[in-house]
Length: 163
Image 1 (cartoon, rainbow, N blue to C red):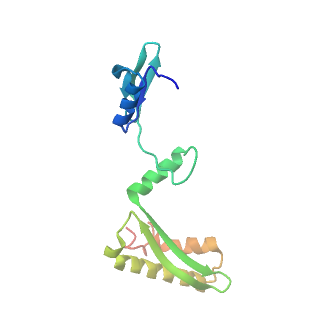
Image 2 (spheres, rainbow, N blue to C red):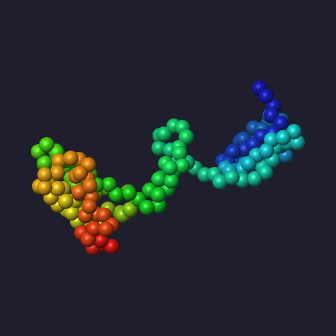
Image 3 (cartoon, rainbow, N blue to C red):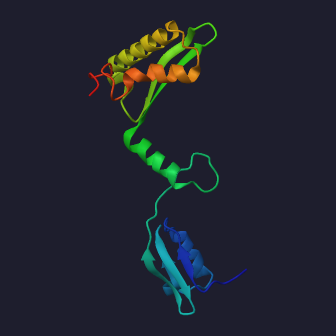
């Protein structure tokens, strides 16, 4: 077992950590209480907090390893603005809609308060899918483009008249 000269306490500041350090013979003035973001300098003269850096919690959703700035930026945007996903399953061979459309929202609108809006959106998507299929579109990417057009910002058919 070792007897450390200095001990830095984690942000949780558990009293048990300080007590354990003292039990192991570390002087009280050698127990450093640190917070997330503290810059700790270790030198021959001792250990001290010399500054701060931006720090906080990072949720990674099961990804192990470094998360790039692009991923973090996207997560901040999703957290601030929410996401709307439209799901439609189409048999491109027969041109039949198998399931959907279904509109799923997260962080955008509370569904029970916006059922009418979501129902209207699903109806518009269904109309767009049926029109694209009736026009002979069978390619998945073309279906996505043609069915997404009424919702585009420049379309006069967009909800709210394209504003």
